[in-house]
Length: 135
Ligand SMILES: [Fe+2]
Ligand SMILES: [Fe+2]
Image (tube, rainbow, N blue to C red; front, side, top):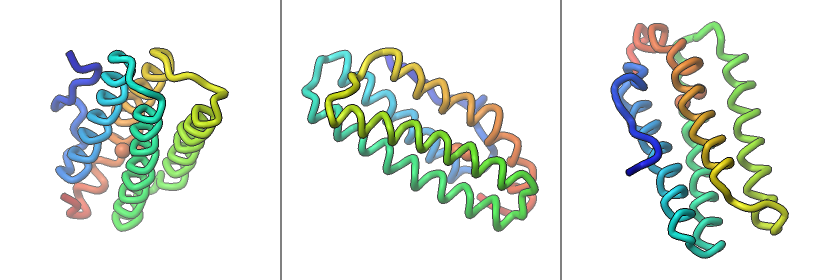
């Protein structure tokens, strides 16, 4: 069973964003599955890299969309994105250096921030960006 299951309760009402969020869920699930299977460090490292890269792309996309919609809470949202990115990047760097190990707590941390950020922060821009015509 997958760790994270995307369903409509996570929808922000913008199809592009929902697809990106589902993609992020998939990456966390892949990382979890690979860890459970005891895959090699190189495999886990590259899955982690993929997640970091996609997180960057998703946040940049979302920020552009909020900017275009003149979303009033953009700057606070941007700060949250920076914090989250920093945490994941730092972990990935430590993991590669051999200073950190990939375990269930880290996977839980990733799935937690992802779901909470969508439910509590991303959902707040929903009405504003929908009104601006984003899809
Ligand atoms: Fe966000
Ligand atoms: Fe998001």
